[in-house]
Length: 317
Image 1: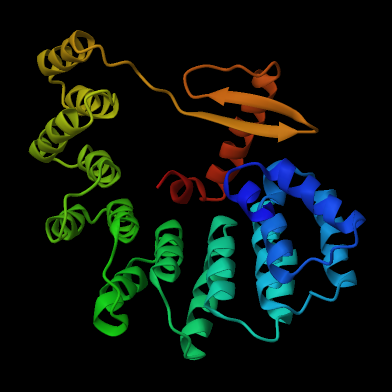
Image 2: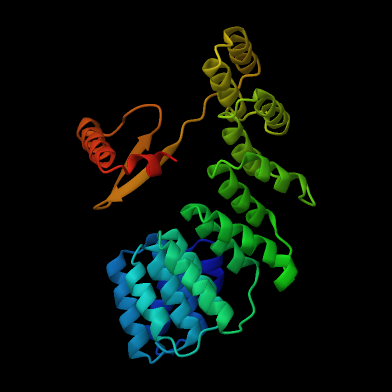
């Protein structure tokens, strides 16, 4: 019942039922603790996660591989990557699930070199790898712009490990190549795919092609996306921007008219941040926060400081 609640997004009910079992002297198993931990990061304060960790130690499950992996997953999701790394390092027996959990946690917390080291440790231990392993490692290569290593790992998937690249692997490698300015190599990868590329992959190609001298690639990919994703504003906006950069004003007006005629609306990015139980919303098209001027002034100062230290190029690319 606890696992059912956890799988279907009813984490609060899962925890309440777990507390009821403790009050009724029903000793939890490693699977019980793992299920409860899986939903702790979504709605519980970090302090309660610490309390749950203490309970795990009290019950004698800290050395269990399943529970330890769940603790690693919990701490990575709440951003306490150092806690996760300590638990992972202290594990006596590490299986593929443990390694995959650590690899995914490291990459999502920006520990890219540590991600690669953990992958190499996994391979050196002789444990089998799977598609999840490669998804995490290729994502680290993408975030870190490790082009040569990323391509080497991607090519080794099927040749050395017998794992056929799936959509998430192709997405990572295309992102890696386009961000590195290797558009032709990215297109070659897309053309070699055994199935139809997703819209996410075409988005990477589209955004990269807009900066190329030949606008035909941009026009072709934009037209393809307009057909497959008719309500997406991205192909119209990128194509309009490409025409504007080249001074092709008639083409720019035509794209905007077509966008309006088809009823395609601009979709702006949005992000949220929670501070002391208050949720603040930021949209790309305007400033909503009541102290937005202060926030963006500090951001501008940070940019100036990074420009002085020659870091701004790496940030923008």
